[in-house]
Image (cartoon, rainbow, N blue to C red; front, side, top):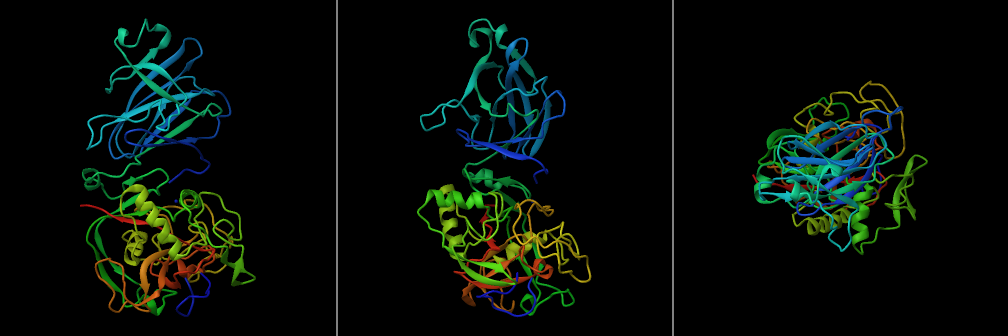
Length: 463
């Protein structure tokens, strides 16, 4: 990031959804409060058998059934397909091109014997749109039951009646359904988490990825191009237990959910990059950072204090304690076990991150300087499923110190030093490439708002 008011130091500074997928409707599910995300894939050029892909992001197996209108025999219910956690399966279900799909799922968690994932009642007095049809009890054997063949009630025919929820996907040929757990983790569920697992703990909560315990060398080696004195001395840090970090910098949509649920007011002034310099612009803000943004872009023009307010709300919403990542946790998660300047290696190009690629790093190639944010998951995640660096820099919890002399060695936040300033990590769309190195760091005043700074959240885990 180019230097701006509040920076303490001198010298140079320093996403997995397939392309083309469009996000669709989100449903609030009952009991387990799972989130059903409907993703519509591009329409096929000619009629074909419809592919229905279901991805289970929950922490336990699920069984899935679907329903649709057969052109000749009317309503048909079909199932079961069993999915292990963190798995996907594509189901070829017949000539469903352009037809509306109805769906139902159930699962068994470590805290409940059986849970119906969603039903007719939305929980606020309203009813979902759907259809009551027959199924067989959940098991691994596939079934297909045509409604016109059922004589009398489902029970009289040896079946069970359930409610299939309508998905508004009739204009698409193919569908991908993502099932995600979004209820606060119970202690047994939390303890069974493995490195790389994802979880959500409330509607609109950020997607968290589990980072393993381990040890790493924090800071940069003496001969790393772009190295600064505040990245030394390089020292060993031990992360004693797994923790979770948001896979992305908090997005506009996620931050707007907080603003819509509270009386919190965003400031109407923010630093913008204009004519080669950072200047405070009245009227600039999270909602107007000086360039167009979509909801899946990182939230910027967010101060350290704004981030802490969001985290307090998130903790209340989820019933769990969220926080900013520590500086050590951030570097550990973004390195993903590597020791090179960037997690992917020793050089950098504009297709690996969003930064000022008109500047070359260590003799590497130049590229485009976009001068704005892009989707938070537009680039590739690292091997630990964490996105970054670049695009928007992240506030972390630590007070600012100009060297690592006396820094904690256990991964905790450094609460001593200049606590009027806090560390910022990761570089941004405005940064030169050296600022995107895993070891690069800066310090800014807690109240500063800049069009290239956002934040991530973290959570300690039982183990």
